[in-house]
Image (cartoon, rainbow, N blue to C red; front, side):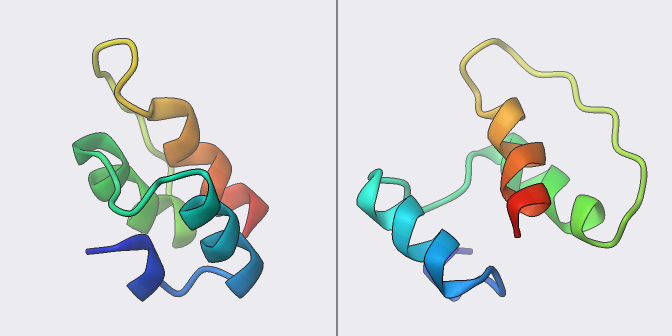
Length: 61
């Protein structure tokens, strides 16, 4: 999955690309779909893996 192929709003995809983010990290790949469906998600991963973005990107969308 690439961010550009996602169903995110165009402005979000554009800003992700501008920031240099093309593909989600593993934690983002696993967490974003259930967050978008409104499900509860508990994610545990090492610092720096993109956990915050896994929740913020769908919220902004």
